[in-house]
Image 1 (tube, rainbow, N blue to C red):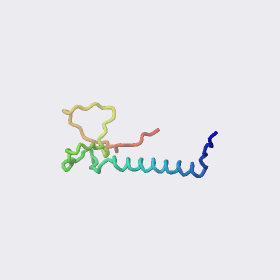
Image 2 (image 1 turned 90 degrees about the vertical axis):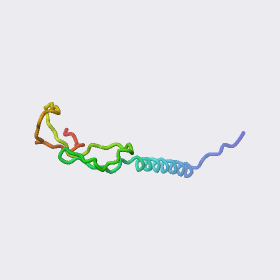
Image 3 (image 1 turned 120 degrees about the vertical axis):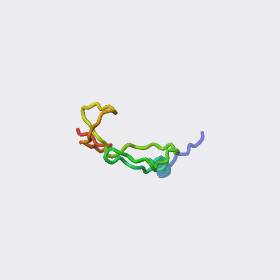
Length: 94
């Protein structure tokens, strides 16, 4: 019969630790690589993209201050005056 070599407890701990550190490094690298670019935010319902380079195919988040008209359906032909602004994204109240 052959002798089976058993791994010692410290060796198992080291292997698991190295594996977890490697996974953590990969995850942090992924987050840093795919971080959204800095871009302008909306102020008073307007976002200025005049200096934005659209050739890079970067997505733009619509974060910022936007006009909000609750319970109203507005068409492009209607004239309206903004009376209520909300910050997007915002936390929903529970």
